[in-house]
Length: 245
Length: 222
Image (cartoon, rainbow over all chains, first blue to last red; front, side):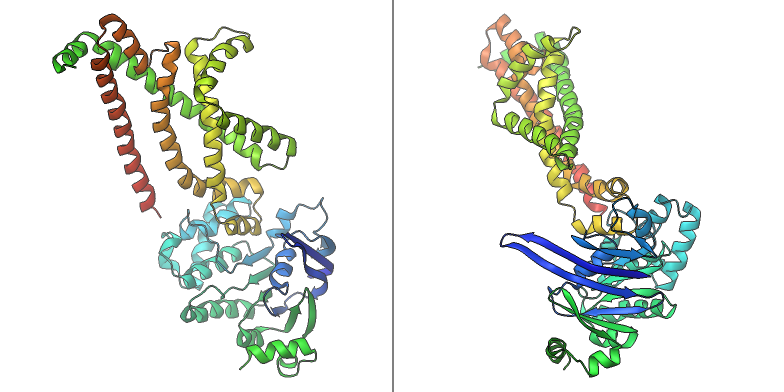
């Protein structure tokens, strides 16, 4: 479903160029749930943001459903409509109600009429237990509720794949569970998902495959049972020994 | 200064002060802020665009306008605008254009910082849903930026009300012009100045009051 070939990306910073991705080649199959773990600054989020071209890679290719979306002649907006994304800081739209947050994109992209979108929004909010907030503004929601809203906002576009960029890192500890529950339920429906996370237990439980990223490359990847219990690479070992206690 | 004379002045010249003067001042300020906002928006969009030449030109214009006195710009407007335009323009319009350009340059900076103050994550989220840059700007970024910009726009209006007094250099008809006229007729300098101060003060107070109310209403919707 998503295939990347030798992705490279650098950022300019005051000390010169910082190479964040040093050639990432990876394939995410349809229906697969892939978690990406690793230390901060290892390139996890940048890699994820490249997958829907929020970051433009310096070189390399990204094939999404067979189309090279790094090609400048491709209308990236059409492909992004099929890729939902959930952010660390929720990024819900504060100037709209909860309902409007969800219906905005389906209506603007002419995927649905306002009536269809409203109906779908109600079903989605029902699913994540936010139906009574439909007319509130996001300012009145808790962090966990905002993130659940952000998830159903992405789902309203009926995407083929969901990208999660540290969905629980900005949450108060007692709200992590409710968000992970929603993601778990979603994954059970067979949604192809790529999840950047620091929640090791969660990654172990939901993923079909775990990738360990460090220093701009995928150091190691495989079944969660293998990576977590029997890591091969010394860097993976070191990282896991620090986070699993 | 005697207050009896102030009342006599008001009685005899109220039309010049309160009708002609105030209406010209408010008209000039309103026109300035309205067209200034449009000019400011255009400059702001140019400065945020990818086109380097356009960016450079706009940056240079803003730089020059901010680095020269407003009175000088009004002079330039007064003498230059009628020469540049193929049709006849009134002095009022020539001066208004100078005011609007000046105001536009200051407002463009307010607009730019208002837009940049919106969290970058908002644009990420909008684009990730498949919206175009334009759709994201219109539905997500600009409505949020507007809240940051409106107070600056209001303050600009108040500043302009006071700055329009500079237009009296060319006897445009504003409140300050009415001072020049009435003083010329009566030689009651301080009485006239007193009336003027009250007019400007009341005008800006009324505006401040309504702006405060408006801002409070904006905050409530958060």
